[in-house]
Image 1 (cartoon, rainbow, N blue to C red):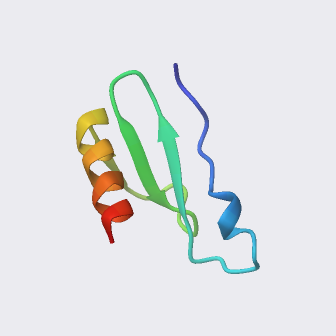
Image 2: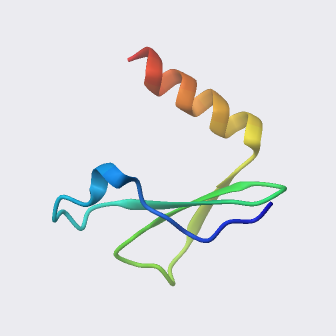
Length: 58
């Protein structure tokens, strides 16, 4: 499963300081929406899941 880059529906409030996320079979990509041709972070599915769990715990 590979998806295109997308932003959260929570980021549609006129702010351009957003990140975009993309899911592939091997990784989860995260990039700055203001610089779509710039570098992106790449996380394993497990690391991404741990990150989301930590956010939810806050």
